[in-house]
Image (cartoon, rainbow over the protein chains, first blue to last red):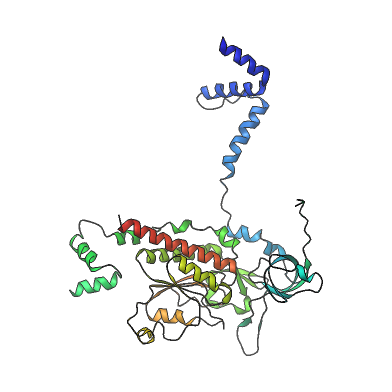
Length: 166
Length: 240
């Protein structure tokens, strides 16, 4: 009798939870598998679906190198000459800014006259690529000589468009 | 006696006491070193990285077509608008082999020497060497350090058992002299070879980018992890 009374109270408080619990006990009793025409309500079905979603998401197949390359930003760039990219300053030597934009090499640009004080380590900037690697063949040599640097023009600062008001 | 001395040279740093014991108990107990060497991945170094990690660390970027060394062609995936791209599936295979070798050398209490020429990443390599208890040489290489060691250091010197080159070229973009010298002295070499390098003299070449700090950081982290695993295993197996 006491059990029935507590169940009554539960039903009054939250019928959905009671439905779910009853359905679950029913399904677990029947050999651990859900019957094809289960009597789960809409909420219960959604609950079951999202419970299993978390565990299944972690098993992603490893991406092949070919697909990684095909979907990379480097391939999206196309012909690098004339493209605008964002970079980050990682070193400053007086008026020279060493900027890394995600490529094999960094580029070195002179500090602009406008907003000169804002260019410090960690600043994000916009660059126009002229050459991804400063290398060319000199007369008399079979192989290119490389400077281990990219050639870019510094366009300016990247506007901070974050919505978080700090 | 002669066979004993030959065996000790072949097995490197095994002490004579252990050698005697293995000879007498050869039939009964299996040699622990042989078991480690027979295993394809005794230290589980194959799980230290994935192809995605290599991709994110920019290991697949090479130099331009004009500076490509023909001997690097087997490792190259192709060229994108004049820029060489390495095949990371092949790089992963070579890198796993190199990490396995480094771990085995550390397991056998071998001396490992890191090499890098280039001021940007020199400090990182020296710090990595210190953290894993091995050695680094990132400065100018005098001619006879390996080939004329007794005269240069004034005493009998023990040469390294493995040389790891994080870039196999020096600042003038010529191959590092130590690659040739290590080959002369019979020292195994592991080296990261970029598209303008010569992979021939390196025992375990690893085709990949050697110019980006991100790539060098990745190599440092992986080799340090492999060496530390080898050392831990040595402590566990022989100090029980």
